[in-house]
Length: 173
Image (cartoon, rainbow, N blue to C red; front, side, top):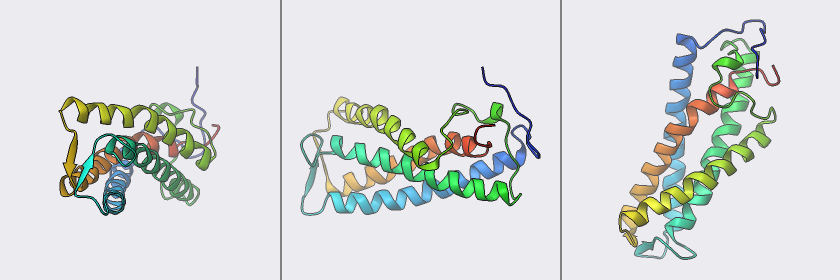
């Protein structure tokens, strides 16, 4: 069982923490929406419809999108938040406030790879299964791009708060 270790300035989740998490989540949603748009444009170049299955299919495309959104969000948020913690711009969060990721690896890159792999392995297949369950065999490129931007925004909205909460704790404390 993990116990809270009091660190100088450590406190439970406060209104300032909630504001910080909301602000960083909003930035993550915007950045990941733009990146999803760019990658969807690249992935759909030269085709009129995007198939669900196959080497260039949407099912395959979910894997790198899930991994990269989670990896990049984790690394960026972890490094920026630690910098802000050291500068005293945001208060340290007790491990009990870290949410579902209190024992995340301290190294930001390792953390990013681990979180990215977990999300890619869990979310990408579920997303493809959901599209298949809806009876979608392919989408026109414009619909594919819109879906990928919405998916990127939704994924960022879901994964960012727990990643940010984990970043607000002191590594190993």
